Picture (spheres, helix red, strand yellow):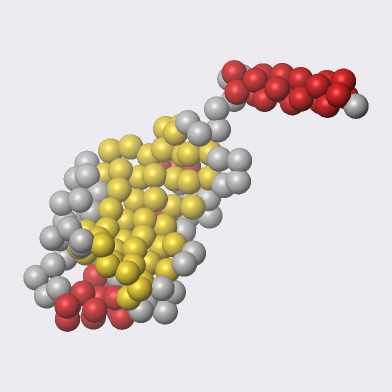
Length: 151
């Protein structure tokens, strides 16, 4: 029994070492052209960031999914899933376009942080993550109700 276990472990170790040292790297960001973005992503950019100039675009392939990252010369970064639906908007030096922020979240920010702007917006399975000027990070559930504040 010990020999069988040792043989199985040896096979697993050999296979994992071969995979780890192979030329197949799924986690590398591969530069791509704008034309290679999914149609939904291109439509989102043209509707919301038409005045921005693209610096570069990368495709991050993973075993389970693909992710596209679009970085503009202004420093704004967008992330899309493999279907081209946006997941993250990071406007380092400006505000996230108002029309992209759920109304309930926008109202909360306007009421409780009237002098702040939303600089980052993330859609997660569990809800929304929002960064505002002043350094606050707010988390909202899928119903856009505040659940956590990080200072």
